[in-house]
Length: 127
Image (cartoon, rainbow, N blue to C red; front, side):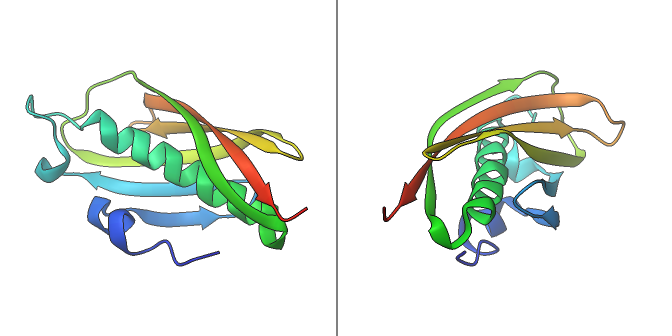
């Protein structure tokens, strides 16, 4: 798997607490650069973190059999967040021959669900 600690991931300030083909845990700090105009966490950040968690977990699960690409990202925003640390936990719902479906739940420091998303991944294999 390619290095995923630079680029966009670094720009968002994502920290990986646990990464495997069965579970991905990501933390980040909400900060003004990631706010939308009303002073709350931008929804695009949630979508990006959901996609990142699912893609990394899916790629690790698929391993050297191929690569994964996201084909659908459905992310819901449930609670406004202005500051603090958020944690995303991604787990697989389905892992098949051609596609995977991952659930990612994002909570605040109080354990409250602030966003949740599903990502469908296409498994790209040589066979």
